[in-house]
Length: 401
View (cartoon, rainbow, N blue to C red):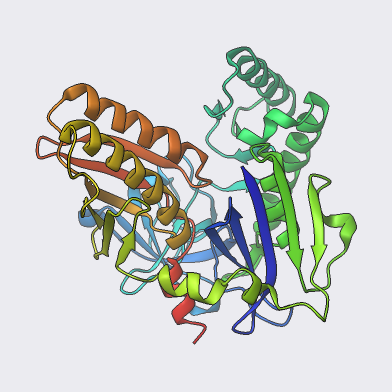
């Protein structure tokens, strides 16, 4: 598979566009130096508890810049980072007026507030350090021995660096391309950084952002390169960037002044407009309807004229697999998250349904966001979830108009 990454300015904003075999698969939003980043996901800040509502399992907080935060009450159990109590009260229970340290896990959307958590984490190239006290290794690392070795390595580091057992480490898929020495070094650095950050919070004022996860094109390219899933990788840009920051796996193509802009070369404005359409055409004549709602996203697969003639069952399976492949791409491109229901073309054979489900799990495995293919219901609807990391593409583009 060939990867083309286009880094340019679209509607006055720096953006990156990921093409896999010339299919637009992801749109990444960056920001001009003078801009305030829109997304707060990953920010670690001090906040004040506004109220605790056990009836809805909720904690409401006031955060930096007058933003409102929401946290599930059950999330606080055992991980509270209460910096200061209101008045002279004692005890472990979190209460109104307490100053706490939290990390923002989801941006505000429509009628929903920002979401936060006490489970602070810092993400590196190969690992994620957090406060769960547990160690895990990405299941996308297929070599069982390698996974076991990495787990043992993390446990050994934690025994030495964190004898009290308060921190945890998750080994990312990208770690498979790093040496043990590189992973060990990054783990120790992030553990130290998170400890120092928590210590500094004890004297920090209320409503103070102590850490912000910067998103740069260099970081994005580094993570794409670490996946090792592309036969050829080309970086196209008409912007100023230090070539030394681009991973060696990329061949750099700088757009010259006498060439058309990358927006024209790759037809990006048209492709983004199509990414907002409800109807998506498939290569064999079928099509999808993608309908986001407040509670979930519903996707309907229609065969059109694509399964006329021949064995209906086998042609339905083939059409469903084509649809599943396109759905996996659309989820990434549109940045659809939460609950997803898919109504595939009906099939009668159980083995065909199983093959479709296995195929869907396989093709969503390359998604940088966590995707969970749950099951197929008795009505034939496929249930999925996709972890939220950013606002949907439609919402982000609407803010740029």
